[in-house]
Image (cartoon, rainbow, N blue to C red):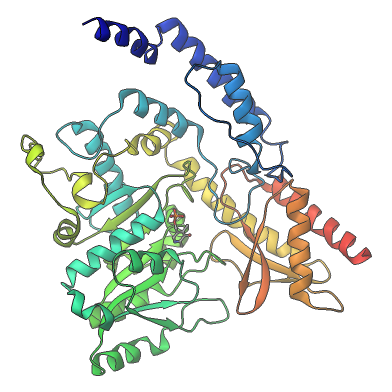
Amino acid sequence: MNRIETLEQVARQLEPDEQIQKSLAEKVLSHANDFLTHLDDEKAFFQNPEPSSIDQLSDGPEGIDDILQFLRSNVELDGINAASGGHMGYVPGGGLYPSALGDFLAAVSNKYAGIYFPAPGAARMENMLIRWMNELMGFPSDAAGNLTSGGSISNLIAVVTAREAMDVKAKDFHRLVVYLSDQTHHSLQKALRIAGLGEAQLRYLPVDNHFRLDISSLDELIENDRKKGLLPFFINASLGTTNTGTIDPIKEMATIAQHQKVWFHVDAAYGGFFRLLPEVQKKTSGIELADSITLDPHKSLFLPFGTGAVLIKNLTALYKAHRYTADYLQDLVDSDSEINAADVSPELTKHFRALRMWLPLKLFGIKPFRAAVEEKMLLAQYCRQQLMQIDGFEVGPEPDLSITVFRYVPPAGDANAYNEKLIKAIQDDGRIFLSSTTIHEKFWIRVAIVVFRTHKSKVDLLLEIVQEKVKELNKG
Ligand SMILES: *Cc1c(COP(=O)(O)O)cnc(C)c1O
């Protein structure tokens, strides 16, 4: 009994009193606000010569001021500043402020979002968001779905569900065929491997000069594969490739997939939320015929990292891949109308992820999101047009969405080597962050305008920096 009392004394330190809670919250809030206040003038990339040190944990407590100071210098101002409007590398998103507040509230109430019974409201909230995304993609509103941690897990859920829908057995895994282009995101191959389907054959279809999958041979390839005794399994279309933001011919691919009875997946991790715009809905029609769609609210819906989504029509196959029960879960009461997230994903205990998505959508309404995605598309066009007018610059195809690529072609010497130096100089400068890619042996610099904080002034800064670096490189 003495031991219990002593332990309670110490354990109670885990629940600071109200006064201390308030003071902690104020300090964290003011730290966060200070970060945001300086964000626009702060660099987008910090290259610290010394690797930042994360010191060891100790048995005793430390003060919040020191901890926050440590966080600022060793974590926040280190590497890519992913919240910055100057971050136009890879596929960013920014991280909406109300999402951070949503995360805070989700963590305080610690709702168990994996199953309806312990948190009916949280489950209903996630399912409402899934219905909203289903409608946005032209899916029936009773299609299923899940809020995942990101596009990679969404692709994995789609692949294992397709595997169950086709009822393929291990002895046939090596006979499966997947149809994709070399612009498909590598998380699809990774998902296949995790799903045990690493032996599946990958049929890479050619791309046209917009890097769009060329479907002219698809139907015939599938026929030939069948004749060879193979099992055509999965067709992947990208709604926004990672390299160039290109949209594959979704409708034509959907038609072939339907007629050939092959699972049709649309990877819309980057591009999905551009469907808030009627013109993109037109360009991506046929997506409603897909079997599964991957989305990433942490990209074009600007949420903080850690929020993906998958939408799937075939609930039976989704359950077949993921639904389990256990003796110790015997008192759970299922809802007739609400899906349990745990039954349609690899997760059981689940972060109350819906709140970080629901809060900003409720607070702002959908209109500013629609404006922001259109603004980003126009900014990518603007950036490309400006670069086209400067001597020596070559630009990629007109962007379908908000990613554009460019390179500088020097009067003499190897252009690839030159652009490798150019991207290094831009990154060393750090005021903006861009990344590069190689497409069919050509080195390109990418501009991915996806952070909600990227406005015209940042694109103008980009144009200024790029020209400045070219001048310096040309001087030698
Ligand atoms: C980002 C991306 C992925 C992977 O998503 P994560 O959220 O990084 O796991 C998959 N496909 C495409 C097209 C992407 O842009």
